[in-house]
Image 1 (cartoon, protein in one colour):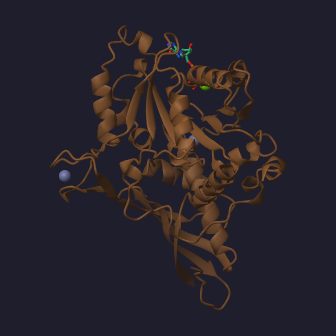
Image 2: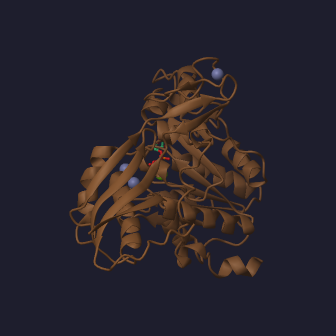
Image 3: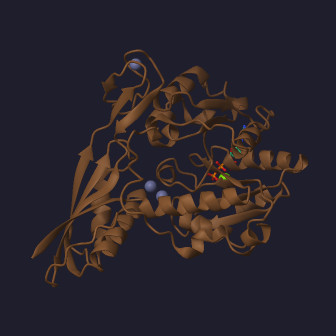
Length: 257
Length: 126
Ligand SMILES: Nc1nc2c(ncn2[C@@H]2O[C@H](COP(=O)(O)OP(=O)(O)OP(=O)(O)O)[C@@H](O)[C@H]2O)c(=O)[nH]1
Ligand SMILES: [Mg+2]
Ligand SMILES: [Zn+2]
Ligand SMILES: [Zn+2]
Ligand SMILES: [Zn+2]
């Protein structure tokens, strides 16, 4: 006998539930999460090292986690900023998921952290599908990648709260057309802010940090059209419990409340 | 690969619903995949077969129902298909106060399974 059951569950319901729990747990400790997405080599680590250093100089407690398939290179670079840094090796997975992230934060995240930056695996495809509990999702693109990337990766750019162009110091050498890039971003994500940066020339220094702090302090964050659905596809179906170990940030969380 | 993670999530959820209900074998799974969900149906079908191996879903069919994207303008009420790459500003008035009516679905809608037990109604806690 074959039975037909109307399950009606979002495929990513479990990740979304974990992300939701993480966001609430972090908010309760006064921490906002910033998720950085880009293709490999766009300059996530370089920009993050600069902004972390700036935060430390300004006395703002921040921390960073960087995810890669292999090597601890990025953690070594980020640690030069002298803020707490941790490397996640994803064991072959090409993106981070909320439950995995929760496990890494447990018993590590310093209690007074105001901003927690996550450098996702360099990949513009699947990290876009996974909410990590971020308050701010930042998508980076370097001038060398061409103006059409927002059109080729519409989900990644379409779900960004903030878009950052990197390596503007070499824009001329690669004939990067900033206006065309902005128009392409606008097409898939109307109204999102686009900022220009160069780590080499100090362009846009502090923009990422300032935007992240503002979001953490409750300033309104851009709402991408792709998430402005009259009917939230991820929200219906039965609530999925998040496994207990990822939901609980561990001893540090309770020491503060 | 992205679609493999998605396939594993589907198998995990279906298995989690089917097993407690006394299912012995899952025959088919119907999935809605929105045009803007960022998932490639062919790659998902391929990954699904691999993800099912050794579970109650072994040999199950994946039935993908594509959902076209539709957007609506808040200013002029126009409704349009954004296309690919999507155009999410209004083609009528260039407005940016727009919303997506459909196209981001990634949803398990229906599952068919065999069971042994005489039929207690499936509890749909909601
Ligand atoms: N000219 C120039 N080069 C830069 C800039 N930012 C980063 N780079 C260079 O770009 C290369 C990649 O930078 P990373 O910071 O490692 O990029 P990433 O996005 O972290 O790379 P993955 O983590 O491997 O995905 C390095 O050689 C950097 O030195 C910049 O502002 N200007
Ligand atoms: Mg890096
Ligand atoms: Zn992935
Ligand atoms: Zn992928
Ligand atoms: Zn309009």
